[in-house]
Length: 355
Ligand SMILES: [Zn+2]
Picture 1 (cartoon, helix red, strand yellow):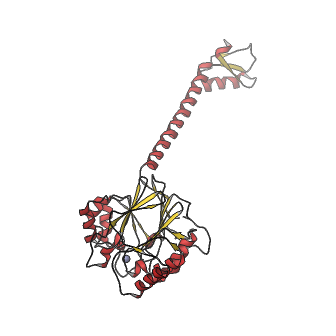
Picture 2 (cartoon, helix red, strand yellow):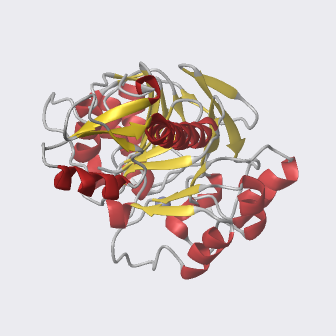
Picture 3 (cartoon, helix red, strand yellow):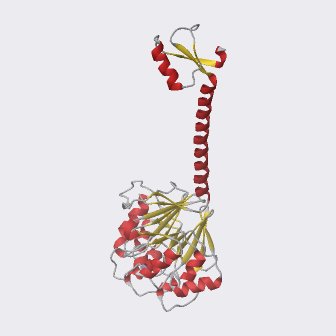
């Protein structure tokens, strides 16, 4: 009989013991053989409690497993994920100090350096690095320090998208400060001192300019980029000469459009290029004359990054462009709001770092 029951022992006085009987309600006996003040609880009630505990632990385990599976699903797709979303600015590194986004720290890292109303994008892929544009003349030191601060001494590629100062201003300083393996520039000239300085730096380093040929692919570590524009020999608007590239790493893709306008976008659509990209560097600082709805329908960006200066004279980014990006379902990041923006990829998912 005792095997099917367990004991509850209490104080010797039966009054106290009875209170326990009442409390549990299921106490079958009060027995004297075992000792005064002890009673027997039917074993089934203990068994029921154990089962309830087991079920509770099982449900907790199920919830944990389901949560793990859903978080893995997010990481599997080329989806955007924010690790840290606050808007503190990432300072340029001083001297040889290693800072966030240093070369080799991530598989692929795309740095939209905050150069105000200008463009400068550093891309690192394991031990390889490339630069698209170098900001205004006044950003020369900032851009050079930023690249050096990431532990970079060699740039595998430098792309000067088009010869406007806000894209090639700091380019001569970059060419002078780093070993540059290859420089890609469109076949268009400019009479500005800034442009002359870039040509002089190229010549002093004994570099040969590679013209952009649409469809050409270049390796960057384990990633690869393809030239998509310019597709014509001559344009009315210098912005349309912009070198446009699509970078692919595993399942993740990035489209860099310089200041290309509607005309260049139409040409890329006509050529039938695969424009789809997870992250779009919005053309021309968010100008209303770029980023058409047709273009966005082809790109289908999840993330849009606008390199733009606070309170600039051009009214960039245009409200119409912001509206189109929202309509396309892209999450918008702006350097005027967040400072330098870093996107990383492990080949499966893009993560936005903005610490
Ligand atoms: Zn520009």
